[in-house]
Image 1 (tube, rainbow, N blue to C red):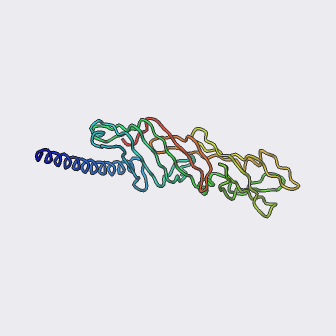
Image 2 (image 1 turned 30 degrees about the horizontal axis):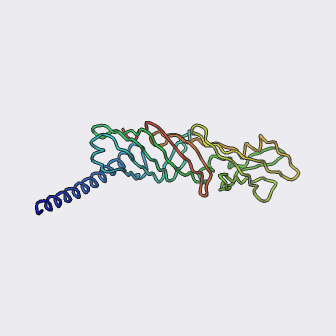
Image 3 (image 1 turned 90 degrees about the horizontal axis):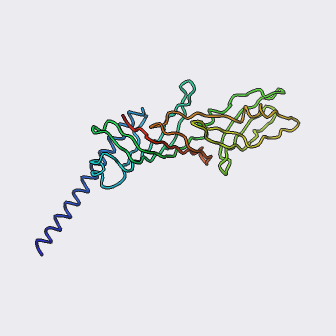
Length: 241
């Protein structure tokens, strides 16, 4: 019985040591991965990297990680216009089946899904924010974007002949790598009949979101309280190398 107790104690100690070594190893790997991702994507700050699953060491030995979560607080995406950027907040991606090279210099995820937010003040940069002649001596400009409820964007338009901005509800959709905002209805201005195409030249606009981390792509979008919430997805997503 004494020998059995000693054996059990040894097994428990070895188990605890294995867990400690495994957690130390995964913490080190997360730090290395975060540093490499920051360099690869030219990020302003170090991202959060969390390697899921236990034990880590057996995944490491097999050359593939089951689940890796990446969080980037602020990411500057290309807009396809003269080097202009748009800020994407709280980009979080879940990477599945992450394989890596023997020297850990490159890593590729079999598939990835994620979410992020584009604040309304950032999206406003794509709208017609300068006064524009829409005919009959009337100028108009978009002066604000906000949550319109039920997944809609409230677009505030200032007309030169009115003392206060007029608001319209707009739908936001995704087409390829582009966010598209389109007014659902047109406002009525007393005594003035606007030509729809001229009005939409103000209210409707597009914003390209290009070169996201790992080449993930826009999948869907929905208006929310603080901005538009986007989802992204991709396959064979390259994390490094």
